[in-house]
Length: 496
Length: 98
Figure 1 (cartoon, rainbow over the protein chains, first blue to last red):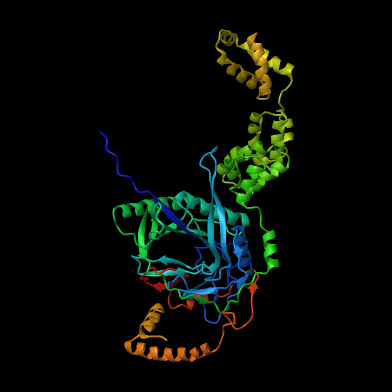
Figure 2 (tube, rainbow over the protein chains, first blue to last red; figure 1 turned 180 degrees about the vertical axis):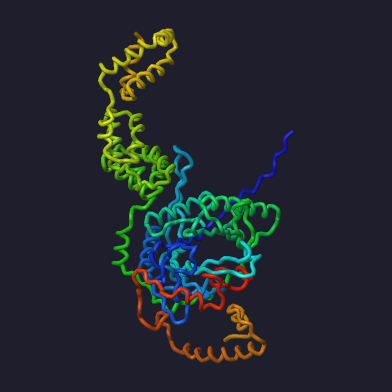
């Protein structure tokens, strides 16, 4: 006997991300101190300005403005014709002035979007989605605290402060609550990072804290209009941690709702070890930051001419490249995605294609053997001796039938480490493919003569043995026999 | 105008510990200051665009060039407490981050 289970309520998660991204300028946002990440030498990159001494005058770094505007443009934002800085007041020892210089009601960029793309498998259709960008603003980073006597705040009796990071320029990017799963959120964060790296305005190192994501998340039954109670999650320092933390939190909130337990508006910390989130503190209503205009920094008015110039300096962005690779180069969504993940790899690929290499073959070499070599040797594609032009030459040697793919694979390690011309290497080593019928027939005759019993078995119906003969011919020719021709000739000879 | 509760709230936000007498005193004083400024609202500003500053100035930036402050040790030494190259601060009671 079967009983039908009660219909389960379906839930959806509403997720938004706040991302802080350090800009890789030489100097800090408002002072001429170095931005170098140097935790072993505390307080070596400090000045009266970043420590908030009375009477000092902060001045905006022109690169910070340029980078923020470029990031805004890359995220399809409207750039504010009039923007200003504000003071955000709060008390915490990592903030020497007791206020952070940030932007409140007139951020430099607003109303943008970015496109995320999820491709599950090599051949699957990509799922694309536009995620709204509410705003992007400039602000200064805070210092770093070391809690003495304990790893955690609770157990420590005092704290030590390093202000090297105080005043390092940040852009904070706030997304619309358009994300619905951990996977989408992780992809959004990765795409943001890719864009920053393409623009060359940030190093995007999550482990060092140059890219930090805070997540806002609530769940509600599908169909319900009102949002559920919003919870903030912090402390994820990898993309997979973002995904795991969100997936965990969705489950936790649904379970609480099903059990009739309350969900508090609070901040929770992701605990990588246990794979759970832990309550950190309650949000006391909305914090009273008492923003007011920063009197020491005049407003910013980006002129249309300046905006045009910065726009013209933007490189082709990852999403544009992905679309172009698919539509113009005929690559699969998956391949386009792999090739464009890193700008230097995409540029290498494009240079090899421009030098005459077959698109699909170049793509396969870059994603296959070359990627594997880079990975196992921890190298960047710009560091290898095999320049894109040589790869194009190598690929052309294969497409023209001068060498087989097998030979190309064999000489690849030497090209990767030593460089030089692929053609010359092939000639020097005598690896040119044998495409002469007579020459191949001669080898085949010798192989057949040397294996009379296999020949007999073949002729008695064990046709699988053909592979054995092909192998022997290839071996005898040092891998140089044209595989296609060998197959044809061998078929005839074996039939007798 | 400002009342006593608001004065208490402002004191709390500024982490100031004030006495009952001071609450009374500051309420009176702040009301007198705010009342003085209130005179400005007699002006008709309907056609005046809002501003946050008195001087017409915009786009003041500097080049991204390193000019490190020469005497960093003095900065650390000027703090009430230090430990090695660090500034030392008392036990942090709440995690009231921004």
